[in-house]
Amino acid sequence: MIDLAALRRWPDVEAPGLTASDAADRLLLDESASARAGLGEGDVVVINDAYGALALGAADAGASGIRVHQDLITGERALAANARTFGLGGRVRSMPLDAELVADARLVLLRLPRSLAALRDIAGLIAAHAHPDVVVFAGGRLKHMTTAMNDVLRQRFARLDVTHARQKSRVLIARGPRDGADPQPAREQHDGVTVCAYGGAFAGPRIDIGTRLLVANLPAEVPSGAPGDLVIDLACGTGVIAATLAMRHPHLRVHACDASAAAVASARATAEANAVSARVTVERDDALSALPDGVAGLIALNPPFHSGAAVTDALAPHLFADAARVLRPGGELWCVWNSPLHYRPVLERLVGPTRQVARNSKFTVTVSTRRAD
Image (cartoon, rainbow, N blue to C red; front, side):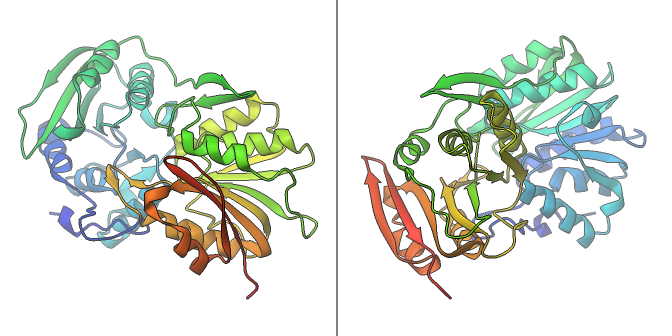
């Protein structure tokens, strides 16, 4: 039997206290074991699996043709790496969050997202396209679960059962899909920008205060030391910065990227809603791994500080280092960050000379100039 404790988070950040599986994964696998017995090829779907514990636990127990969706590309790559380690790669397949993922599924293992909007999207999709007899096992840690999650599931399923808690975890079991609907982005207008957000995208259809401060202080003229310089919105979220740059500078082509599939879908919708989709390319990526060295004149960044449910300052340095690699000498990284995190020395070390541009009670905006090698 596969040892879930042996799973790795790589290429996501690995540090003491950050684990690749937990008690909620084990409870989900235990509660669903009898329901999974005897299911056929492709009957099992796994959604929101952090690093592969659910998919590989089900595969190790005999399930095959398992369709998997993970929002973060780092989780998807960790699943692939863990599957290779345990010889289970042929039993799992990563897919987008769409109708094909859940079509005619008989059983769904779901790690409950913390966002109710994300849960609405997922529940609606399952109810619309899974088999009428589908059973959904949705679990999580008690500290992240609310009774509102029950209400969301009851809107899309006729029956909801709640298991006993174990090791501070619980599972909700939903049956009888009804009133299914494909996900649609929420839309709001802010400061002349239409913001679109699918469930799970950070800040939803609003503009968070860090992004708002960065947008207000972006340079009036975009540095362009060489023809063809890329302008990049790194960790783009819903694409507010990318759309703003494209709207302010009609000559610009902007490359936006994020590790989150929900963010990428949202950013594409935001670009389209603001009539700049022809000049904004949005890709799912781990930092800037798809781009070569020295191709960018300007990068804008509002770095995340959550890895799943854990708060960590280990994510931003990875983004800073990759930004430095992709910037040409003299290119600029415009960054907003929570002031108590004191990122300026890290930016000085990884990118180059750094100066403060703006600061309010919570956030600091800096610009770092890529030093010549």
